[in-house]
Image (cartoon, rainbow, N blue to C red; front, side, top):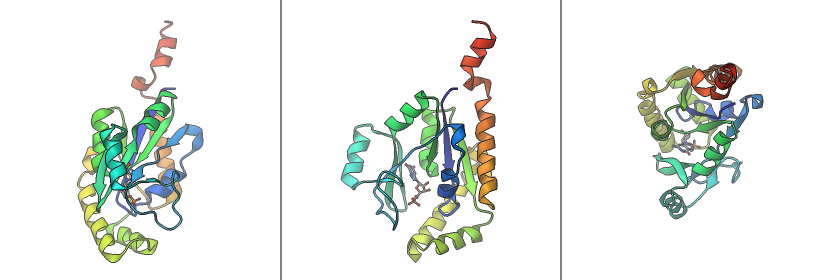
Length: 199
Ligand code: 5GP
């Protein structure tokens, strides 16, 4: 089976992280770990949640073309390590990037066949509530993240799918269904087509 790139974006507090961690491994998912200059939150682990780097280190990675995409989000840099993504796609995996919209659109330019999924909480007030309950950001950062959420929502029409995350297991089910259907597109089934053509 051919590898594939799935990008999951959505406002901070939409539940992307939780949904992504629950994706069905039988679909051959490979979860990319991003690089960031943001300070680790309590409980976050190096190499599991993020690769935490200084701005200098981040700039060096960017200059050495080690990042597939990068963006600034509320004062910090974030980027996707290129090598892991390329290796996993070559192995036929469904590579999942949980990234914000600017980076997502950069990836779509480079990989037009990438599938872009936007995950939304049921309402903006629910989004604010989730951010406040999370208790990981101060008030100003929460306001910045809510402002950024409105900008991101304006870009939903650039995505192929919109999934509302009112119930986590249902959102996960919908993303699994999207991947299953996308994998059946003839453009992604070169081997099968060759087989049926008797070549
Ligand atoms: P957080 O600080 O809450 O972990 O992430 C902030 C935002 O950055 C989220 O929207 C998250 O999806 C996004 N993000 C995480 N990693 C990357 C990345 O590698 N590239 C881009 N462009 N955005 C990322």
